[in-house]
Amino acid sequence: MAAPTANAAAVAARAVAATGTYPAYHGLTTRELLKIQWDYAVAASESAPTEGTAVKAGRSALPVDEAFKKLAGSDPRPLLVVRECQVCNKTDNALLKPGIDNERTIVLSRWFHCVKLPVDVVDSSEPFNAIFPTNDAEHLFVASTDGTNRIPLESDTSRPELWDAMAKVLGRSYAHDPSGTAKDILRIHDKIDVLDQKLVDLEKSRDGLVENPGRMDKERLKKLDKEIATTKKELDDQKKSIDKLSKIDLRPEKKA
Image 1 (tube, one colour):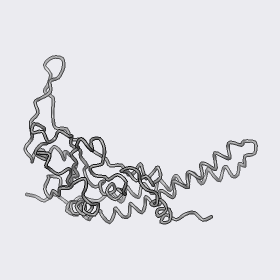
Image 2 (image 1 turned 135 degrees about the vertical axis):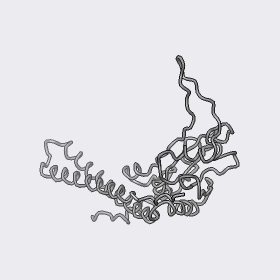
Image 3 (image 1 turned 180 degrees about the vertical axis):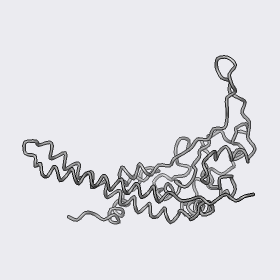
Image 4 (image 1 turned 60 degrees about the horizontal axis):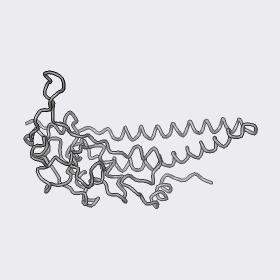
């Protein structure tokens, strides 16, 4: 039987419904790649202790410009910021919708500095309160590093609207729009899934062979070991391709 093509495997895989916010139809390698890298903003500092235990400095809201500087830190990428709430706390449900394909959203997020702010950010004494002043503020937004070009979004925003907003900010921030590159990465995910399944099948065949040492075909074992090593290298090469594609230069900062 001929090995499935990446496209055929992708079509078959997408026939299986995702049960959570992260695509469930992918193989292990792609699922590991499809994780948003979150930062958790901290602005409060501790005063130097005189004796014994440190005493926390009193907290107060930062001016909005300073809040964005603290939020961005040393990361020059545009911002994707989520404020957690009692419903979505400790999940990605504000950005990712359970039960539907979030793969494109996750891939696009690799070109953003993704930051989560706590539930109590709407408290007027919280350092980042100027960014989300009240519960009437949007649930999340994308923006340039300094907070300009902000596009407010909600957890029920349609996927096309979300992707369009992400693409607008990315297009302003990078030397070329990463949206097209995202499509290339999605295609590589399908290739990785085929290789993952091939590796599972090869290792299963090898396990079956070594479980019967008295009747083991050494030539067959040698061939399987070679195929397993080749498939692992191919997987590694595909991951390196994604890393290479992801490296897109940011636009130079405009001088004031």
